Image (cartoon, rainbow, N blue to C red; front, side, top):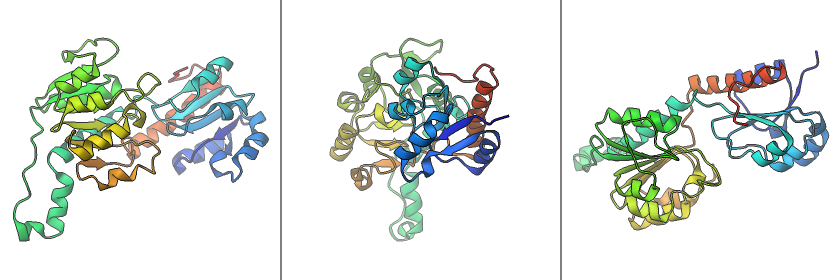
Amino acid sequence: MTKPHILQVGPYPAWDQEPLDAAFHMHRYDQAPDKAAFLAEVGPQVRAIATRGELGANAAMIEACPALQVISVYGVGYDAVDLAACRARGIRVTNTPDVLTEDCADLGVAMMLALTRGVIGAEAWVRDGSWAAKGGYPLQRKATGKRVGILGLGRIGHQVARRLAGFDMAIAYSARAPKDVSWEYIPDPVALAARSDILFVTLAASAATRHIVNADVIRALGPQGLLINISRAGNIDEEALLTALETGALGSAALDVFEGEPRLNPRFLALPNVLLQPHHASGTYETRQAMGKLLRDNLTAHFAGQPLLTAVL
């Protein structure tokens, strides 16, 4: 039986690459020195695209693959896939939700604790001899009992809220419509920020949510506020965020995603009031292996004529 031809947009760990190579004819776009020429050569054979959330598949790539049937995304975000081009041609799209929810929620809470309690600076205080030379570390902020807002109560947002309930926090959330939960519903992001000490951004990215956390939201969160983003970079206006952090209009931020990553704006590197993470919320062995399996299972189901496991289109 002829293996289906698949365009691979980015690298995967060996535990994913080996079974992909065994089951499919993988065309390594990520390794091609001349990507346009490579697409022109292999595109007509390609029946599926295997990509990652941050890489996606743009209109030109999709157009270069006239036999394309399905795009399988390694990650929960699929905003980098040109969905309009897919709809126009009836191309299916899948992602890998649920399997990374717990890890993303865990990292969000870990970042909150690291910032409020000064974990990074305190560790350096011990290592550089400041504890012995200068005494105790400067006082930090309490996390328990704070007012928290969750912008986007989907899978990840819900799990963040569940964890924060253990810290006796007053939880409110914003979403397209009220959910069947006991937490307070505040539909307006500015109003949500104004009643919050800590604001988590956990909503899916789309054209409608781009820069939803704008200067008004950041100003409402205020000079004692903490902003945490474990969603997509485009949900926050980075220019407004940087200005607020530099001027003290916002107290602090913890970020796992950035515009243009991994080449983030160098202004972030000069700020003492921001915790920077390398887009690794799902970065555990267990979760990455589960993501890879779900990506492969969606491809296998498609070519076996079975229902897709996690279709978004």
